[in-house]
Length: 220
Image (cartoon, rainbow, N blue to C red):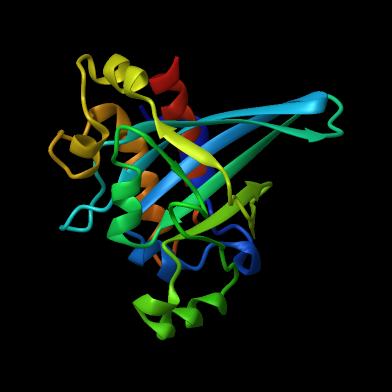
């Protein structure tokens, strides 16, 4: 379930220092979700996205990835198609648990979501403590730049069918994200990219591309 697109996306997380996710946020995140969303239509626009989510292990490593998806319909003028990559930082255990259920979670309504801060100076907000950090921070990513974006109202659900296909047997998202299921070898490029992204001296942009490749292998 490691997708090259996703890991490349991750590796690009710090190419432009003033438009990257602050490293302090990455290091303190309890989990990370990656989505690639395609919008198509004219007047009545539809959108569908797929991706994956991982959670932080007690030892600082990452759990086996779980497949996720989002769909939606909205009115608006959209000629042709549009593809956008998103990164969601899960800042609390509650946020991780919201992605661990069998149902779906709505950002904003059921799980607090805030525009993700970017740049080298944004990390200072962490001094506010846990009470000053939203359950999730949401970003869009394009051409090496990260922008805080609102995903309120976005409905995200676990893809049990894709998890079963990838792992070869039925598996609960909760067992993936709480570390019960061993990490698959296919996800190693993702873990390598995440480790690089969380290193102070290393660029953080390759994660998203590798996540994409992992997602492709999970969802294909």
